Image (cartoon, rainbow, N blue to C red):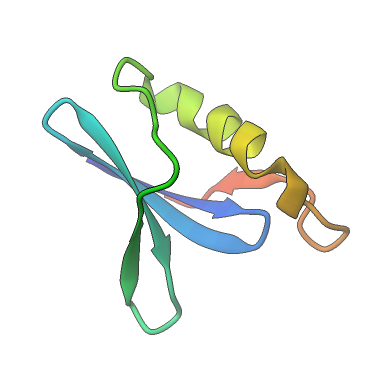
Length: 72
């Protein structure tokens, strides 16, 4: 399972691998970089990811990108 978000202007994807969530930064060139310094609790549901990412990255909010949006 993979969910893609626009996190205050940065495309990020979250993948469920076994019992673990993994977070990645996405680039326009289809390069994917794993984010190791953010740990998503294993028990978190897919529906909670948007709020969680907003809480973690809220300092990146700006006038052009004031929200976290689910892309897919």
